[in-house]
Image 1 (cartoon, rainbow, N blue to C red):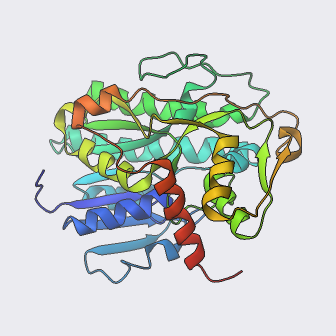
Image 2: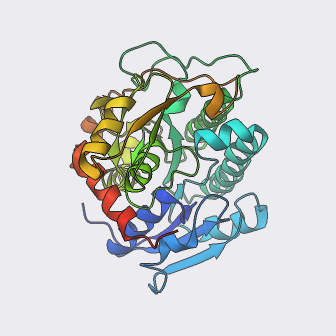
Length: 333
């Protein structure tokens, strides 16, 4: 699909997914404004494109109403990726998780709504997460399934609830103001530049294997996840924004090839360092006694396939190899 050059705003553009989306949109010939407060992102993630004349990088927060108004008013496309990220961060800082996931989204949508009311309807992408399904017991999750959260005394659920509020806001702006907003629920997006610092499992495993182990598996390792390469995901995100019929809908984005966390650990060992070992750790020791996990997380991708012909291009082994190659290229710490 050929699209004329646009000015694209990416919030959280120095983060893992955001930096890959930045590179993709620049390669497509677009102008990109990145706003990131570097709370979890890193300026180094943009090193390959920081001197591109079509990139404008602003170190700032999307909790700043004046800044949001300024950058949203210049944008022809908006990709809102800025958020609290990672299970470890959510468990430790639930207040920050809630505030950083809801308030900026409201600011951005309010400004887009103001522009829509004056006749300028800017397509936008609101990043959500598979966490919104909570602990729905279904084997495979579709976008119309119920959201099933645990008790408010379990901080884990604050993340999924806050992102669900973001979804409600985006869909309400579409309904009331005809804002062309699309929501994407990410399922375990992985690839180069992702850090294990916030609990992300694959980079954590690869880093451990490269160091000789052990790879630490939480609980019994029978939790099931699906892993998608970030390159496939950012192409899907950009294509959804350029697909008018996608507006006002929610899309699962990721892979639908399930693997247990223990099997993932074993495959990382086999491909990265056969000498590494695997050890187990309880959730209580890894996080705290209040932590609850989701045993199975597998998306139905029928909707996104029908909408844009989405297809993952890399299998799990290729993904592990790409992460390991990147980790090996980093300076020793």
